[in-house]
Amino acid sequence: MTSQPTFWGTGVALITPLHLDGTIDWEQLARVIDHTIAGGVDYIVSLGTTGEAVTLTTQECKQIVRFTIGEVKGRVPVVVGLFGSNWTAKLVQYVRDFDFSGIDGILSSSPAYTKPSQEGLFQHYAALAKESPVPIILYNVPGRTGMNIAPETMFRLAKAHENIVAVKEASANLDQMQKLTKHAPENFTILSGDDPSVLSHMVHGVKGAISVIANAFPKTFSQMIRLGLQGKFAEADVLHKQMQDIHPWLYVEGNPVGIKAAMQHLGFGSRQVRLPLVPMSESNRQKLIEAIQSSGL
Image (cartoon, rainbow, N blue to C red):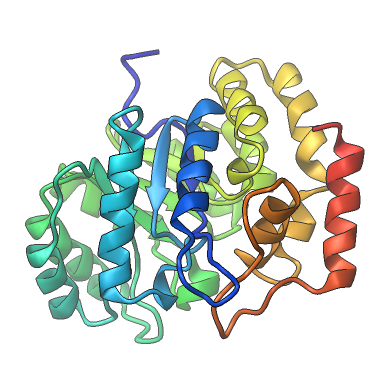
């Protein structure tokens, strides 16, 4: 499958492990990187929502990127989340000053809170595309940003800028997902941002996911995606069902609260998060553990 585009398959949105005092746990971050690569993920996504990028300082973000690239050692591509600013000019300047050595792509969500029009979204990403030296994955997550990027806007961007190559679609809108897979330009990849539904979306042409649960179970999730890409949906569904009862507990108190509790249970550091997030409640943590234990994973 070497002829596939770079961002087909499984991307794992890495957690940022923290010590109980809130500082970055570099030893556990290295372990998570090695665990996910050994489990078969196709690429790493650093500093996404799951990585708590918006609660990290600029210096911490740069340190995490350099550390991740050094730990990956070229084994898989590395994508970096850019949540630079809701002001386009500030994001563009951030990109100009950023060290892109060793980075294979960026994931960029639309501006939050400002609620731009579709033309504003187009101009925002167009400005980013003009400055980025690496491919761009759009990140459409209206539940967090307050605005949906319309399919027509995505297609217009992909046609106008060859370095806009994919979208992580997390709108939870099946009609939009079907429009994207039906009408997307040939060189524009549709990826899922929703682990529980990705397999059903692959029936319509989705080419993979940027996953949360792959932090914990990279082998199972990656194999499910590979089987889906091969059209072996019955076999893939067996793996999907193993994870099915775990998914709800990963999000019941928000992401990455749940996945960090799962990773703690599996021996990858603490479940510490940064305020305004708080660690998973004990009652929900126990239910998450029960779901993991009964899954057979």
